[in-house]
Image (cartoon, rainbow, N blue to C red; front, side, top):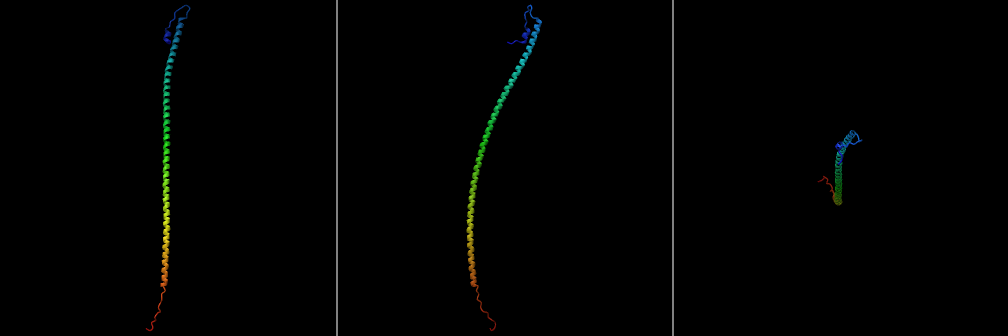
Length: 167
């Protein structure tokens, strides 16, 4: 067991001849006891500080572990979000491509229908033009025939005129 200041103060030495001066020894022992008291107080304070600092270090290490875990969880969540976003973006691109292909196909079909309709209308126009030309030619022939009839029928034979003399 370590020596305490009180042990030093209670220590007594036997008196011998030619020994040390008891007062000086007592004074020195008092000084040593007082110094030991201060040092033990200092040690006790340092041990308290050490315990407090160890607790703070342990608390800080615990907080550091918690922060590290939170960072790892955040990174994991972030990676999952990025992965999910990339998958969603790929799906959106695929859907857009499929929609675009479908729209292009529909447009091509519509264009083919329009071209077919245009060709049909051109053919009908050509038919109408031919019918109209035939009709005009027929009317021209009818007109020519009527004019010919009129020319032949228009030769009017006139009778000589009678005079009023003698009758």
